[in-house]
Amino acid sequence: MIEKSRLKIISYVIILFILSLLVLLIINKNFELVFYIVEIAVLTLIVIFYHKHLYLTRNILFGLFLFAALHILGVYIYIGDVRLYDFWIISNILKYDNIVHFIGSFVAALIAYNLLFPYIDDKIKMKGIYLTLLLILIVSGVGAFNEILELVGVIFFNAAKDVGGYMNNAFDLVFNLLGVLAASIYLVYYYKKDKK
Image: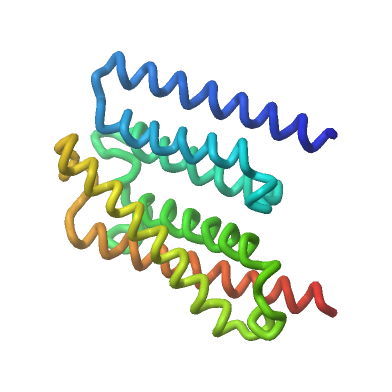
């Protein structure tokens, strides 16, 4: 019962935050960001209403909300004249955007694993390579869908400058892959440890 109450409180805080941000963006006529916030709002509502059917643990829910918050901050916050998404943490090596993609794909891999867990044979759970390949295929599909949504932003909201070019797209996919690999290592270790 306490867990359900915590989830409701977290859900209300997130919904209030998203609605406040949405109103602010509409007032400022920033319709590209409205598009992204609506996308996050829809995903948040799906998670809130279907988290039990999706087998989402409290830690996965926290990871999802962290990812959403990092995404919103990356789009909306500026450091000087540089949007946080374009901010280099390590010059020419690691951008804020890369970290968000890494975390997002890590969480997506955990969700995919939780959805598939009841249907996956123990041999696959114990064999890291099979599990990793399965999760890479699933999360790569999710990542590709995200890039298609960014393309919608480019076409309808003239967001090419904000979304980035080919190299940005390619690095998004690379960091998605790194996030899945990290999640796979974690899951194989966790499963083997749990079986002992």
